[in-house]
Length: 400
Ligand SMILES: *Cc1c(COP(=O)(O)O)cnc(C)c1O
Image 1 (cartoon, helix red, strand yellow):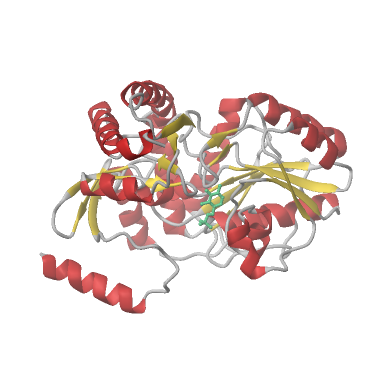
Image 2 (cartoon, rainbow, N blue to C red; image 1 turned 180 degrees about the horizontal axis):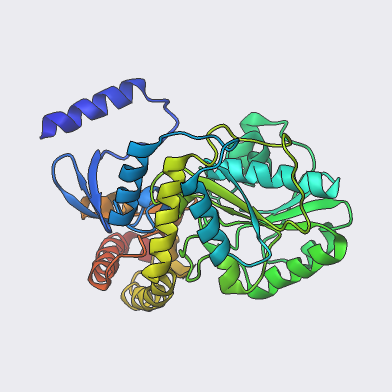
């Protein structure tokens, strides 16, 4: 078995782009909240490809939708009609706020943000876009202009002009910066990459009011928070704030690449040719996404994320209380961040050695994005393992 793994490492190490920090693990199989490596070792997956596997790995309904659609038709552009696409549009518009009655389909999170920015410029005739510090919206040039992290931006400047960043959850800055030249305000209701930081409900409703008053469109980037992750189908629904444009991706395809930009047709009118995507609305991706969304609703996974998330946060506060290295535990639903007083890298490695996959969110935050189907005993194991790893590693810090 070692041999298989070594040969995978060798080829990837030699020929892959070099853009990723590689974790020494070749994952070959997944089911529910578990994955297995090439040596047959089992892991509880709280990384899930940065939150993609909201339904768990290889959800049977998603798998059978993919298999059935793949054997019927693999490709069909948006110039033609397609049953799986209609089914996806139907189910998405039935679960999203009524105002978001139209949907543009594309293939990744960053593309959905690009589209949102273009739609906002088009609808308002304005070019200024207000984003938030610590926000993350993707890596292509338009989305990167909305992304805050200077490390991601600096090598690629100059970026798209017109983007400004305000402090997340700061009313005064919002009040001063969002004006009548603003095309859109783009916000993650819970900042993911920036460290798992929930917006205050007051901030989101205040920005909603400002946008309406000043004629700017409100864009929620729910690429990470959507699909039940934070305890409702979208975090906006959990917060009770309706945006004008909403981006979904990560979990949407049940594992396949797809993104959706839902928008308010009373504010945005799109005509043929102003934007497009060759692969957008692909029938296999749509079949997977429709099945994933239907399963999410049928299995009441957003509600489950809410209940389990609250219980799990309480358990974490209890078991991590002796860990001096922990600064704060925060999150919403099953989107959880544990901020440390130290860099998270070695703890993530220790967790991996003990059968738990988690990810970082910035240098000091351990981020947990488990599938919403994860069981309570599995979450208990995650909490125990975290406690053991963080307690063991703590003595050096207590002396600080
Ligand atoms: C992951 C993410 C993106 C970018 O998605 P890609 O599919 O990697 O382009 C954009 N916005 C948010 C909030 C994300 O979490």
